[in-house]
Length: 430
Image 1 (cartoon, one colour):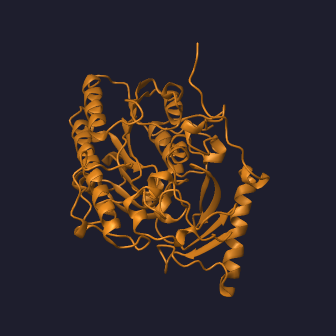
Image 2 (cartoon, rainbow, N blue to C red; image 1 turned 180 degrees about the horizontal axis):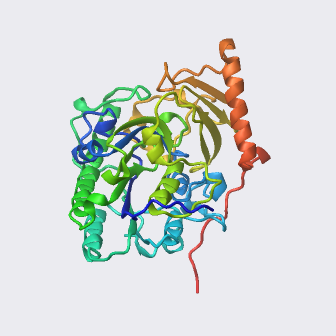
Image 3 (tube, rainbow, N blue to C red; image 1 turned 30 degrees about the vertical axis):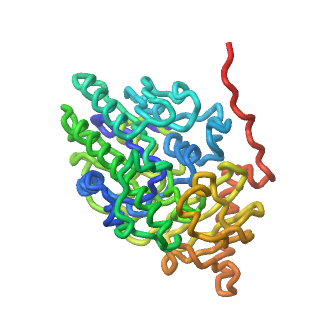
């Protein structure tokens, strides 16, 4: 453990949404209604190539709050299905407590059925479905109540949006003719109607973030507060959420850094990961962190120039079924290893019941290959699997070797055969 001294300890607020991917105006979706997040991005560092470690909620969030991959921290599936942290795991609020921070959870978490075990000094969970606007109200009240408190704080602020469903009674849909349909989805009336409702949920989430930022900035130390905004994983559409394609693991990551840290607002093209959040926050707080963590300091990534030789690893084990997949990504290519037979695109229940599913046919039910290889510079949507091409043998072998070495070094249980699911949780009795 090493102590990192950065001088004054800033207040830190981590705002996290659900199932958003990078669908914001600042990430190249001009029709998405996100004026408040775009305004935040204009005075922040926008990490253009940021990734989760997993394409579903609990495992992805586990990496944000531990700096470790899901198979290393124990959360290889959804916590309401029985998955829990390994006993020796240290969480972000526990790291910050040692540096003198007061920590609070406001709104959503999905790491344990009992939010009180996660290491926060104060928990305002608002149940399993904390809506964005009520979370914004609670954050505003919480900040106002501690405005005169000199102790530095860390607040984790989570909201249900933009998780499905998107009923029109809750969210006003956009005009389907104006939405952007990504290349991996069929462009038809069903998909457009689905995306138009998604835009409505994004608009309400963005309104909440605008309220949160106004509440932060009017505090005595508001302008010196570090603000991070991200989401857990990719959007809730077929071939995105629950897959290891970029559409399933690419995320928004926006970091407002006070001027005295010497990192100007702008855009950073370096590969970044949710694994970077814990060591970055610890650095800002002057906290001790485990030197074995794989994450990097986001302030350094913001300054990175030149060719990016970083390698990222992604994983999926359980969602609503056992589906072990592992992947390795470089700046230019991705290799995916599917460990069990399954359809090309297994759909979770929320996607199976979506409007988009109605208009996409059944081609995704064909058997999938055991290996996939994509050249990201020429095929960013990962639509052409190149793994069987003779000219790709060396690249495939190199990436497959890197992935295998990673699985061995990190003691990934997928190498030992089928990974058993935990017992289903039961209601506590006295």
